[in-house]
Length: 257
Image 1 (cartoon, rainbow, N blue to C red):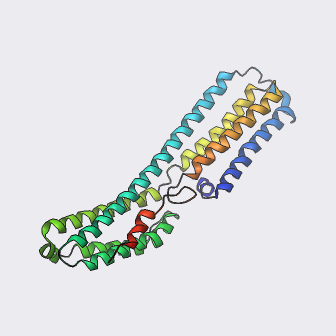
Image 2: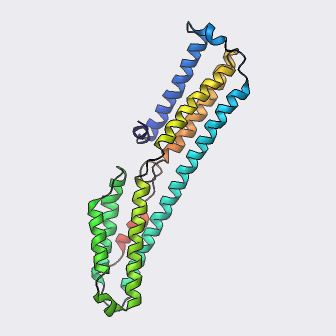
């Protein structure tokens, strides 16, 4: 359910949040002032503001932790893509600088970069990976691992090529792990539910003042919709409005053979 909501367009995310919290506000208003149970509800007069503060603080803390997790994952995704592109560029630079002909490595490198952009990047939006990209990486690693390269280009150059290729593979695994991480789904559920509890707590504090009841619930609901909506837009780093760009790896396709 949470993942379906997070996969919505920006308009869908904000609209669904608005329906949920405005609907809860309308339900609380009806229950407190129009429903047959209003007299029983009004016997709860006397709930003091510190009670509301306790629930609100718990909601604010969890929302803050969630926002920090989302931001940190986005920053890590950006760093990972930049580092991966850097290692692939190192492979190209070393292959060009070597005295031996390494055109086959550069061809395999470009095929791998192209597969990342065209095959794996769309696959990451579905929390999976591309088998074609995995094969392209295996082919690149096989080309770099040719035993004859040590004699033709020198042990130091060959070792540097191997290290850069292995690091690129490790960074690819990190990128895929970040793209497939949906461990925040439960946290989202807790935060959304706590928001509803906070609305209820606000209502209990203002039962004796209908206008204050509506004003406080309206302000809180608007703030929650905007805040949670903006955080939700950044939940998955490789899809959505604020997705990490593949531009550093796209640039590798323009390198010469």
